[in-house]
Image (cartoon, rainbow over all chains, first blue to last red):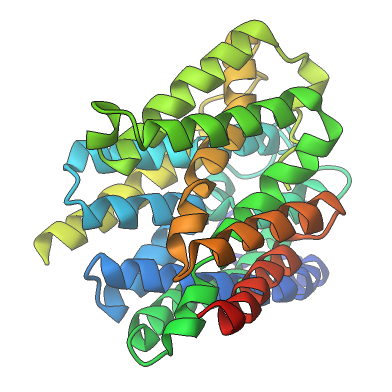
Length: 252
Length: 101
């Protein structure tokens, strides 16, 4: 990641941008740690070891995606289901990566895209896209260095502490992830009545789907996939968004 | 054991492809209005579906989970970030269950 092969001037290792990235990654890492411990509790229910939790969180870095997969693993989901659930739960990163690609200089060495793509998360994307001008790879690497390790270690800690923690603490921590989800979906609901209506409809249908005869027999992950595709497609047909709305403003 | 490792591998692989394919393949903005709109709505629907009623079922007392949902919505509505909202929800459950259980 440092000044290796391509000596293409402004894309060589930038110490200042890297330091700024390290700085901006610290609060993200602290938040990640707390949430990741709660994710570790879900991972523990899926029968994962601390090492597996560490590797899973390090390589995937996605709260919603990992949570959906861990809960599906408890239900012994098939490998195809795991792949589809990951795809659905992490589909928003597809949008974020689209937005990021528009901010990459044409002359930036291509290999940077393969490393930056590894850790596109809501928060890292948020601080990266908030900087003006073309994306500076050194900055992205800085944020990853301080934000991602706490995420990975937190999951392992959650798995290790799972049983040692009092039931009250586990119960409290288990809502941290949902709190994080609320922090992503509520602010855009305030700005857009359509998003607000969609969130309420999602809550309602998710509740009903868990109680309907045939549908409730499906796994939670499968229900999530079906509801997401149906509701998002319906919303896309009824309320198509204009280009300026989808330029990543919703993501951070 | 094998099952778990394979699931981790699939999850990591799919997540990486989702993130890296747009960065490497799509060099221009997507033009199709339906796909753009669909992708725009997906995160909100997925996260909402996963949050409720799961948040109420995650806690020892369903009422504590419901309170966490209500407080989380209000705090997020007021513009708090990911971390403060998550901590508020945890605190509500901790306090509520102290009285409820």
